[in-house]
Structures are given as structure tokens and as C-alpha cells.
Image 1 (spheres, rainbow, N blue to C red):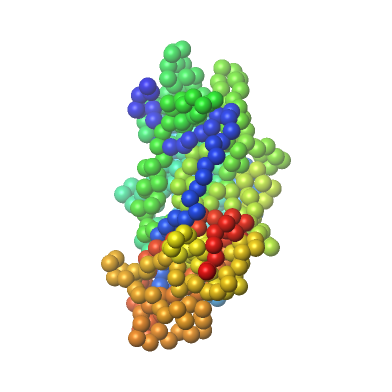
Image 2: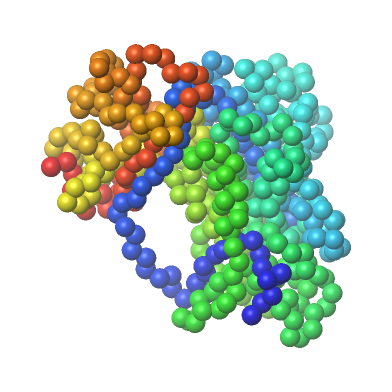
Length: 488
């Protein structure tokens, strides 16, 4: 058994040289999320950018794609047409403990926000992060605020390729955002939505104990193996090879808990532009060290499997997006680290952030409980490829809504669910209803429906609503929805 001190801070189940097991998912699940009652203009975006010796082209692509994120965030719903933004950049370089591996300085960049100018003649932000507040950017000399944000990002994002080869993306994000460490004061705002974007072509090697980084030649029977980066993979996973379990795994739970506890439910979004989700195909030996086969190789670069990053993203369900993009035709695409452009990926991130800021969208096809799970929808809606609701039954959706813990909001009369223009809730005020809204794009939000609170009195500023609904695990528009009954 491996000593506990060598356990990496991640949990991943990996199939090695064998077919992935067939997993049957239930067709329903409960989702819980919180959203502002009024329009919420604040969002903090943290980019976690890899800096090993093969990331220059990828950083350049990120620079070119950033305007797609900004363009997707603009909305007339905000007083200044844009949300109040904080944009920060950290590297994945935390060094290799106190050891002096080539290219690894003790502590690395220490999860500090990087804001030094990287291009000749450009202007960085006046603070360690880029800020856009009420239409004013903290970029000296910028004539237009949004242009200033774009140019400041272009000025600082190309961090270079001299960072430590031991990528610690998850730990760097944690340290950058941990209020107790206070590495980056002022960046993370208590009431802002948080989006973390990982951009890396190598897997994470966040460790609980720096003994893994010991560079001294290991004894033949050492658990560490030869002094090379393969240790990160070798000690980081549970492998099931030809049906035989290999007791080599670590835990991601600590990072899941950290990000979940930073904000109320639904207020943290995680994105990744990383390697394809192809698993580990094989390993080869070179110079006494094992190597994981690259997951993709293109003109822009190459990438090793980023399985630990994906493990974290997967744990975030409707708020975690791995290699997800949205093209100009509103069609979901795959955007991986080897893609020729990252614009679709950052466009999707911007659209999903905007949706979370301006609407209380239901992240999946609504269901109502009965003899089985039936789809709750409007008459004529077609959530699947051929399914159609014979009549409306949105009012029967299995949801509960609270304006404060333990303070439930009653359901509006059925007639208000199908008529968005009707807002008089009469004696039932305040009440909640589900209506189709342009703010809820199924390609981004998971369904075209949002929860709306009707009341005769304005809700106090800053109020938040807690929503819990039964939804299908099948995506809106998927043929699998046809297998579920529509409204009877």
C-alpha cells in the first residue's frame, strides 16, 4: 500500500487499455440552485493558464478568443450594457515544493494574479486584475471601457512557457481564491458570480505532500519511481486494467468542497479548454521514464490527457463545462486545447455566464412526479426530436421555491404559467411560475424555461431565490426525451 503522504489531491476512475463500462443513468435528478431576484450585474472571471514549455501557441489563441467572451456578455439588461467585471489571470506554476527541478523555482508564481505587460507598448490594468465597473475600466488611457478591457487582457495573458512542468492548476485556483490566504485581495467579491476557466495542455499534479517532487534517483523498489513527471499520473489514479483493480488513486473531493463552499449553490461555474476526453490509450518508455500518450496533436500544439481537470469539472454537473463551445449558429461544439480557435469556447462561457446573471433558467427538461417521470412543457413544445406536448402542464412541474431559508413561495395559479404577459397574481402574491423566456437558451441553459417571482411589492435589492426542481438527465432536444411520456 502506498504511504498516505504520496496521495495527490484528486479522485479519478480510469479505464486502462480496456473499454469503458456501460453506465445506465437514471432519467431524473433533482437540481438545486440560487439566483438573484433582480438583475445581477457582477461577475468575477479567473483564468488559470498553463505555462510549461509548450503553451505559447495556446496562450496566443486565448488572447485572440477573449473578445468572443466580452461580446457574449453584453446585454441591454444592464445599466452600462455590460456586467461589472473582474478578470484575473493566474498561472499553473506553484513550483515543485522546495526542490529545484529544471524550470521550477520554489513556490513558482504562488497563485498571485499576473498583470505585468507581456507585449511591447501595451497598457496593463492599474490593479492586479482587470476591472469594469459601471462602464469604467481600470485601464489607464483607454478611450472605450470595453476596448480597454480587451486590450489589457491581450497585454497580460501570454504568460510565457518557462513555468514549472509540474502543473498544479487546481491548487493554484484554490490558493488564488482562498480568502484565508488573501493572496489576491479585492479580486473575489462576496456577491459576484464566479467563473473559473482552466486552459491547459497537461494534467494537474496538485499534491498534498511535496515528497512526490523529490528529484533524487529513487531505489528500484521506490514507490516514487524514476525522477520524472510520470509520477503525477502514476500516483494519481485508480486504474482498472483488464478487469483487475490497481490501488492507485487520490481525491478530488477537497477541491469540489472548496469551490462549492465559495458561493451559494449555482454561483460557481467551471470551464476547461483542455485535452480531448479520450482517456489513456497507452504508455511508452523513453529514457527510463514512462510517458502517457498524447491525447491530441495538431498544428497549434499537443496535449496530454487532462483527466484530473475533467474529474473536477464533471463533479459540477450543470455548472461544469469541459471543452464546450457554441458557434455563431447557436450550435454546441467541442473546443479542445488543440483546436485552431478557442472563440466558440469563450463564446459559450460568456453566454452561460450571461444566462446565469439575467435569468433563473431550469437546467434541463422539467419533470413532474406521478406513476413515472413525465415531461412538463407547454402545448406544442418539442423538447425531443419528435415528442410534443398535447397540452400545457408547466404548472405541475415538481419544483419548490424559497425566498429565504425556510420561507417558501407558493405556486401561482395554472393560468399564469402559460401567459407570460399576465402578471396580476391577486391574492396569491407573492407566487412563482415557470414561463418560456428568451433569456433561457436551451443550447446554453438546458431548457427554454425560467422561474419568475410575481409580487405586488418590489423585492428588496440583493434578494436571492432558492429553486429546487426535478429534471430529466436527458438533454433538451435529445432523442432520449422521446422515451419519456409528455403531458397526459
